Amino acid sequence: MLSDRQLDKSIPVPLYYQLKETILDEIKSGKYPKDSMIPTEMELSDLFGISRTTVRQAVAELVNEGWLYRIKSKGTFVSQPKVNQDFIQKLESYNDQIRRTGRTPHSKVLDFKVMKAPKNVADGLDIALNSKVVFLHRIRFADEDPIVIVESYLPYDKCSFVMGHDFATESLYSVLSGKNETKVSCVKRHMETAEAGSPETKLLGISPHKPIFYFTSIGYNIYGNPIEFSLAKYRGDKSSFDITLFTNN
Image 1 (tube, rainbow, N blue to C red):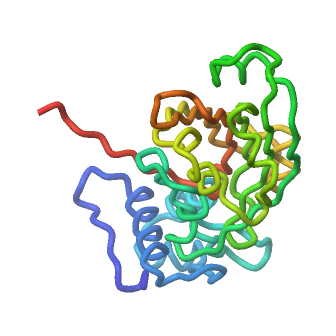
Image 2 (cartoon, rainbow, N blue to C red):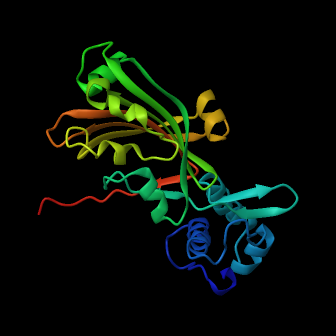
């Protein structure tokens, strides 16, 4: 527990950062489970022999990053841990990612129809403007937490068979993998950050202007042809992403 930890005042690492990392380590190790209360600012100040201003900065950053939440007049509590998304470096379905974290995935289908491809979709799928595409719009959950909104577009001439499936319970990638022509074997992704607008605020249950991760992805089949164009918006307070880099040596 925190009472067993110490900060090193002899090193050039800010004390607020040391405290932040110490609290975060205790949370990640399970010593402070979800919804448990951490010590008060005064208790942390006394425990580590640091100012309350230093404590306040460390706690504020953990609140802003989604690890802690405050209840007025009651205290500061541990949030649900973020869902670690490693799909940047691994081709895997959302359902499999979430199950590996020990949580239960499920989806809510917002829209599922055949439509004409707008320019960005046509360009992404390398098809003619206004060609028929399958449009699948979903919210993906981890347990009861809405994590991501996904808009998926598929070329209708190759993927019309998906219209007979229920994507509230089925995985799109699993359905597509039934044919070599539609199985996604490679994905190119572009990520940027943005502020949550009205749709994200409503669907993801977050405050306006909160950060979201915005991914544009193109999935290719084994022949190198684009088979899926998707737009995904992940909650910044519930998601983290790992990236592994290798040298050329």
